[in-house]
Amino acid sequence: MGWVGRVAARTASESPLAFFPLAVPGETSTSLSGRWETECNRRFGGGENRLVVAPGSADVQHGVSLARSRLNLANVLDDATNRQIPTFVVGPPPRADVSESALGDLSGAFADVCQRRRVTYVETFEPLRTHEQWLADISAGDGTHPQQAGYGLLAWLVLHNGWHEWLGLPQE
Image 1 (tube, rainbow, N blue to C red):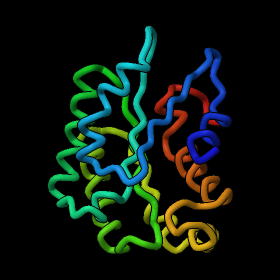
Image 2 (image 1 turned 120 degrees about the vertical axis):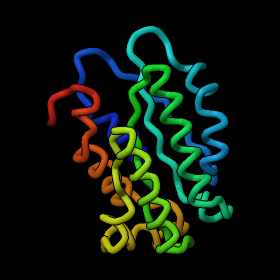
Image 3 (image 1 turned 90 degrees about the horizontal axis):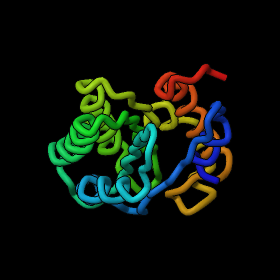
Image 4 (image 1 turned 90 degrees about the vertical axis):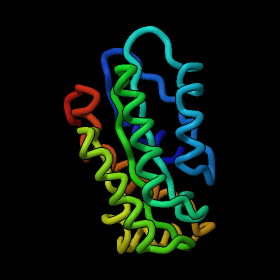
């Protein structure tokens, strides 16, 4: 179910909402920037369309510079804004196999890009960096993906950091 399924399950709306997760494991922001529009065009229909972007830690692992990471996210957000697609960004959570300081810097860079564009950014790195349950979940699995409780923590962060306001829905 992941965090997206949990968030979808907790999002009540008068009209049905469709969620299309398009995650690509290990994808850099460069690759995401290059594919997001084509992927969304295939799925967007009439009515209101929205975009949730959740860049992970791959930029750190693949040596993408902080400046390039910032630019990649800025390009996605600017393109979405130009197309009048409201966008919401979920930052990269901590993981055991990535430098904590490098991932913290990446999350901070993404937060800054979003703040400058007035796009909601959910900080996941800092609240989970020392969270006992998150760390236990990460270490119990593959070191990259959390177990059930960890996905619940991610969903909680999303749901309590602007999700309902972004959708124009009452907070549950």
